[in-house]
Amino acid sequence: MSSSNDSSVTVQCGASALSEPLNMAVSALKSLLTSTQNIETNVASMYEYVKEMSNAIVHIHDSHLHGKSHSAEDKYDVESGSYSLPMPMGWGDRLIAEYNNNMDHDSNGLIYGKDFMISSSDSSRPPILDSIDTILSSKGGWSGKTISWKAYLATLPSQVRSL
Image 1 (tube, rainbow, N blue to C red):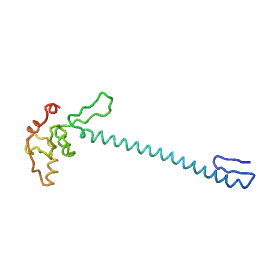
Image 2: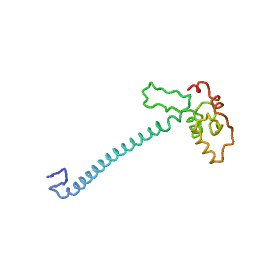
Image 3: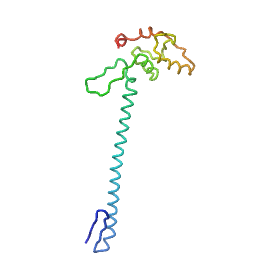
Image 4: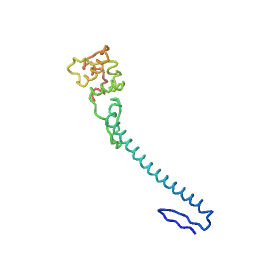
């Protein structure tokens, strides 16, 4: 005769030879059940962790990187239901992005801080570019080509200049 109780499973058999192996099997099943419950708990925890990390990555991309990773010529499909639009960038911001990413962001074929700089004495130059001057002066200064803000704007393709 056997009996079981959900909270504490014990097996009683008429034949004592079977009771020990059955109790061992019940113990193994209980251990397996606990392991399965732990796996389910761990999977749920891992899912929440991955979900949070995914949200963080989307935030970093959309809020901090998105506008800086596209050139001015890129087309954006805003009709497709996309929840994210590129950040509007001024010309000074684009030049900062060129310097930081070592990529052309204004479609003139030049990279700010590598191919040219805008004269710091030019009153039309965006003040945000002072930060690049500070960085370059800490590295020994700029010895390359320096142009005016007006000359820079003339390097931009006409379709880009109108943005």
